[in-house]
Length: 144
Image (cartoon, rainbow, N blue to C red):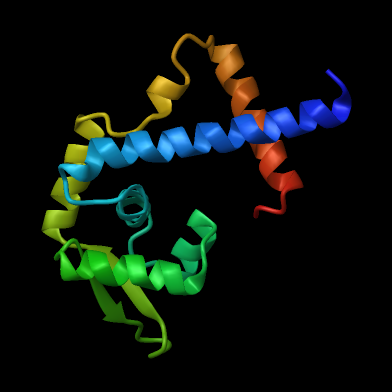
């Protein structure tokens, strides 16, 4: 394959893989009343309670407006609660509610993560190499 064809083919395969991951995750968590992005946000705040929409924006690589929208929808579902920071009234800290914590446990228990499916059949060495390659590609694309 000519290099320009290879680069195009790789880019198309990555897009296809990304679309498949999102579709699969959405299908798996639809029964929970969530989208993949909402599930990612819940799992982020599970590990990073007290963070804000700005932190979620950076973590997911989305716009601030999209991060705020996700947080607002999850708060409407009683899965997140926002509190105003004592240091800066403009900064809203995000915490999981009990329902949010329970849903996170259910997502993990039910295996809604596609990582195991994605990495199925790879050796531990191949998994590490794949992860390192993805990190390098993301860095090349300007991800933080």
